[in-house]
Image (cartoon, rainbow, N blue to C red):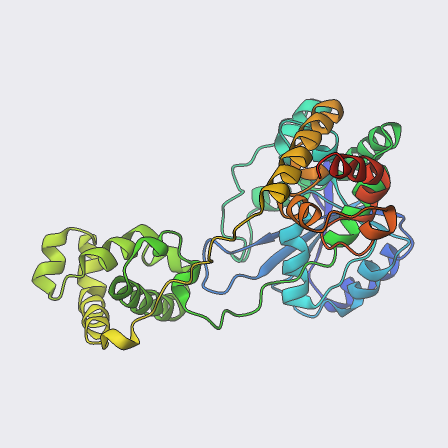
Length: 382
């Protein structure tokens, strides 16, 4: 057991210790969970630590030392064990990506804060506001794949989960008092099913913000530069943005220097980048400039859909209703009904409650809490 001030935590770094831990966790009703990854330092990010908190103990699982987390899978699947995260989306995706861990009975305290109308929902702000606790975030962007980890980083990791259980209990009580707990529970069930995005099969430029401003030749240059960046990042085991940032590649795609001299004069790359990668950059640009015009990529643009006046009027009526509800409940309007869902409602104009049941995007809690008002709002606009 490690001790840092008043915080005690166990480090689990062997398969046998993990099996013992998993058996003990099966008896727990509540688990606070967080993880640390290394996305800022490596090409392929991975989970490096999983922190767990029960009512009696704090645990850090070293997932660099133990890559097989099979003993934990039944714990995460167990619907009788509440798993408390803060901002669970990234964690759910990462646990599935690295370990195929599926989560049942998830409770996201950040989501709960949003449904309670908190203006700031980051864990640091929430803990300070509710418990007067100041969280030191100096290790937040460190490389968690390093081994051995210094005591300060381990203590930081353990402290990230120590308040999750009392926080969840307080937020659940407030949600229940406002009759919104079922809303959050449904949202959490949906959140527990998110998965990592599949490997992109389309052009890399589709994921580059600002690419839509380039002409087809510029897109061809950008695509080649993005491919070069990915190759270099993989070889160096670094995140792509640490090889070339997106603004650099966009500037190169717009100016298209065709020689080392022109590249140097453009002043887009640093001296180090020029020395290490200048020739490769020029080669990538020249290759794109040789692509026949008929084979140049085009940025996919959605045709602007013509919205009938009556549908537009219904959307406006729903928006006004949503804003009024948001003010009454003191929560973000997007939680009540998304723009896409309002558009679908306006187009279909359901007439009765049964018509809402099969409308994609409208959740069960929304139908129950607001269904009658939605139907009444739509009926006012012919």
